[in-house]
Image (cartoon, rainbow over all chains, first blue to last red; front, side, top):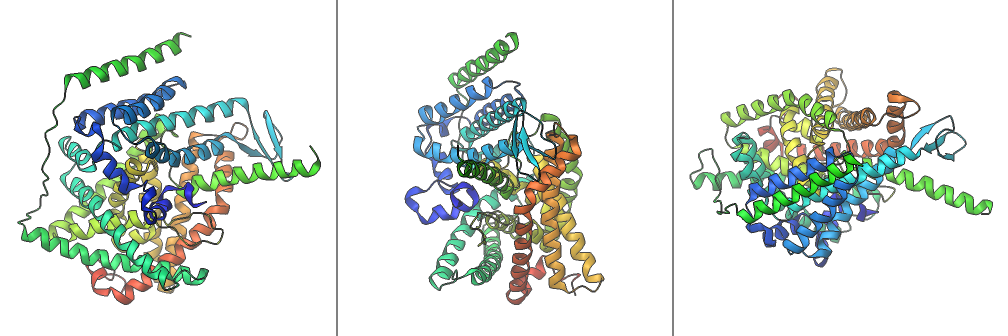
Length: 279
Length: 249
């Protein structure tokens, strides 16, 4: 079932550029989002606060509120294509559902619990409480992912790293992150070429050949990446690189209506928490 | 329902549950929101000394030779891309390498921890794979525990007169298995079994993950050997920069 796990679909989908819902499209979605003009630090704090609200909430209402509101923010305010949005969400959703199943069921030699599946050798069983807890966890997780995707689909990675630079995460880590992010795209392109080339020479004909091809491609990818790394260093040095990479930052001032929006949003979240606690 | 129908339903439920487990662990990342706050912080704190060691080790390497900055970044991107490549597998299910064993062998466990956490951050924010709250737990299992075991074995086995490629295989294989054991323990600590408690829960997660993780670990081992063989043939000079041949000779 290759469509279920994202990492594999990255390259599976790259071949079908029409259905391009992957890390490459995430980058362009972020640049094209109407929310891109919002202040990045504001978006980061907004999304992280919602994320923590989801994870820390004791009930299911806050996560449900966050799931719906974040979808609305991305699609209505950000003008992100809704098909892309839901397609991107299905990937973590698959993981979340499977994870929920794994935490809900229990295996033992004794038949206990509310629902029991007899497998002769042992029993798979679960209780109402466990099922409820699993659903709750799944919703929390989905809420957290929604909150994070609001950020990812509206903020290019270099703005996130530049915000990290401002909170004094070591320069070295930031530089590594910025370079790694750029290099991922380059390597993915190289991999695509290598893979097509190997495939057109029957490199995936049979399991044994496939393995050898995979190993060779991975090794070649590594060699090419090292050569490219050398080239990039030369390029950097010829542009007077002395140990610090700086990128131009667009000015994106914090607007009062955005702050007002956030205040109203978190008042709603707190109200929901309060209502839940009272009932 | 007839007996046949019952059997069909039963089998399909079992299939779904097993698929559930295999998908969950095929990723081997704990999803966002699956760990209570205490565990998130605890695992994060546990990672700190290793990350600090990694940070200083990278800093030292770079101050000696600035060129290694781009090489390390490329290595990080390589681990990210490698972990997103589909392995040709027997069942047709989707499996992918963790790449951490290879990382540990090539760059050492310290550098791998830093590269690992960066890759995990990107996987979390770009792919919603793993998560920011579970970053500590995932970093510990994938970028610290696994690589440390791999590296230890990789250094230890040749001293016991084991063939080098065999030791590469064992290092990657055991490293992968160890990562999955740590993940199982992490999940079990957060979700102790209602009937059997903590130990039963560890056994549950270990047991249901084993059918998918064992073959995956073997694959990881074989592929790591293939990659190392190819690298030794074609890129001796390049990997010498990374210190791969330093002690191996």
